[in-house]
Structure formats: structure tokens, C-alpha cells
Image 1 (cartoon, one colour):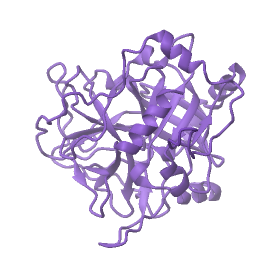
Image 2 (spheres, one colour):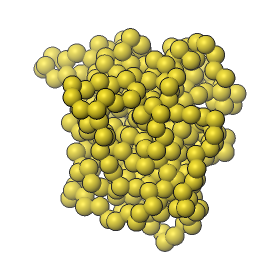
Image 3 (cartoon, helix red, strand yellow):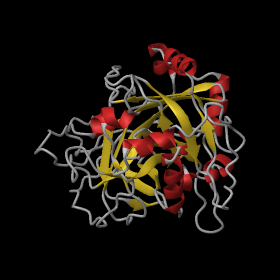
Length: 380
């Protein structure tokens, strides 16, 4: 049972969307983790652009160092997201834990008790958490299959296929408006080798709220263990559309993380590639850590199936999936396995489900707005 304060925060995290014409959509409910639903179809190879990877891994570490060191320790705690001197829109940004003392405080905050009590935000009219979703006949647990082969469709089977995704995906813990939340997130290629992508609502409460505090990432989280440790956030960015309007169409954010024991995040766990403006017809794989019943956030779950448009319009991607809160921010991966076992292109993140409907999850599709956000975040 959530406290009255926690319920109020959760209600703020479910923002209805209204359109000028067409059927009136139900409220969108945010998710902070993911559960899968079997699509029940074979995932045919997708036609991908020749070079969908936009992160530039060729930048030298010296160049990355100069970028990372350009942020002064006394930088302002947040930005207004207006424009830079050249008139280019600048996304809202905020600093995280900069000093050694601040970083230590964040690590100490996220005890096992705090991690277990953190909940996935959702609207009060959002997903039911009283009963386990029914499994489809396609829910049989998949075997690992050939090396590099993508897993079959699933409706909630824990991912056991191995590969890069098991290290680059993890749980993201934050405190927003005084309440603790659990999301999912993934490491993506960047020059600074320290960048993670997630949903915007995992980092900022939306219109009338503020950036999160105590932001920490645990890659490879499994059964309560933290094989790569806890990483503390250095800088956060979200789209102005999310921070100012609560717009789920651009519900995305990036976080740069501090080094740990002298090593950068990407050098320790690797990184997924990132792509923008891919066609909406490519099959998608979703990964995340569902937190609410019948899941407990301790295992990574995956959904797989063909992409489908939001029936109420907009650019979001939809996949049949019954994830519960805790999956928000989990990666939509396409071309899964083509770059190696568990390796693909992230072209979206888990964002919302419609209130009263648990049959499909929707993700923010990475287009021009998120590409600008990535470019800005990768330079921080």
C-alpha cells in the first residue's frame, strides 16, 4: 500500500493526452519497468539503414577527456532549456553528484532496503497490480539457441540469452519530489564512454516538477546482486517537451555517469549502439526490470514482437507486452544480435501504457528531437 504522499506523486506521473480529433484516448500510465507478452509470431529480419549508428566511437579518449573536464564543479544545478548563443535549442539539464562526498552520499543512500522499497510511478488509474497477467501459449521459456541468435517472442519470460544486453541494461534509482523510484536504463555509445539512456519521466517529474536527485545506475542487476557496482550520475538531460509539457512523444532523457574506481562505465560493461528515424516496421525487443506483481524487479524481462502504431496517433512505438511499473526507460532494441550476441541498436525507450489496458507497451521513438538531445548530452 503506497503512502498518501507516494500516491500523489504517482498520480502526477500519469499525464492524460488529448488530441484535436479522433477517438479520445484514455490516460497514459507511466511504467518504471517491463514485463513481456509473447507476440506469437516469428521475428523476421528487419531492413535497417546502411549506417544507423550515430554515436562516434572513433573519438579519442583525450578528446573525450577534454569534453568531460570542461564542466566546472560549480556548474549551476539546472538549466532552463531555452537556447545557446547560436540560437540552437538547449535541453533542460541538471548536475548530479559531482564531488567525492556527494557521490559517496548517493551510494550510501541506495541500501538494499531503499532499492527494494523504490516503486515504479504510475497513475492511480493505471495498471492493475493485484493479479498476474495470463500467459499466452507462446510463453515457453526459450533456450539460448545459436550464439548471437535473437530470442523468440515472449510474454514475460526472463531473458536468459546472454550477451551484451545483460551488462548494458540495468536498474536506475532516483528520488523525485521526495519519493524513491525504480526505472530501467541502458548504456549507449558515446565519445565520453559514460552515457545512459532512459525515459524522461525517470529523471524529471514533468510540468511543475523538477529533476531527480540520488540518481544511481546498477548495470547487470540480477537477483539483488550488483556485479558492476553502483554508478552515480554526473549530469542529466531531458527534452523540454517532457519537462515543460509532460509530452510522452518525447519522453526521453540521458545521464552521464562519474567514473568508478578510475574506470568509465562503457569501458566496464560495454554499450549498445543508438539509431534515429528508423522505419516503424522493424521488429523490436524490449528489456527491463518490472517491479510490481507478478514481478519483483530482480530479473531482467524481455518482450519481442512487431512494432505497431499508437491507435490514438503520434510517433510512439507499440509492442504487445504486459510489463509492470519499473520497466520505464528500458531499451527498445532492433537488429538484436546482428552486431554480436545481445547487441543491437536502441531506437526507443519504454514510456507508457494506456490506463485500463495492459496488453501493449509504448515507447518513445528516437527522432530528430531525441537526436539533438543525444548530441547535447554526449558533449557534457
